[in-house]
Length: 77
Figure (cartoon, rainbow, N blue to C red):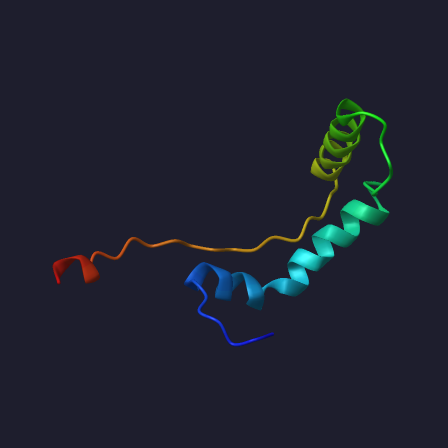
C-alpha cells in the first residue's frame, strides 16, 4: 500500500483484517453467499439476506471488540 493518511478507525480495522477475512470466508463457503449473475436485484437481495440470516444461526462467530471513547481534549483548543 502507498503511504496515505488514514483515520484511526481504519487503522484499527486493518489490525483486525484476519477476523474480517474469516467472516467473509464463512459467508462465502458455509452460508453459500456467492457472486452469481442474478437476473434481478430482488434475487440478489434475497440471496444476500438469506446468507446473513444463516450466519446469525452459526454457533461460533468471530468478533471484533472495539470500544469507542469520546475524547473532548482537542475541542478545548
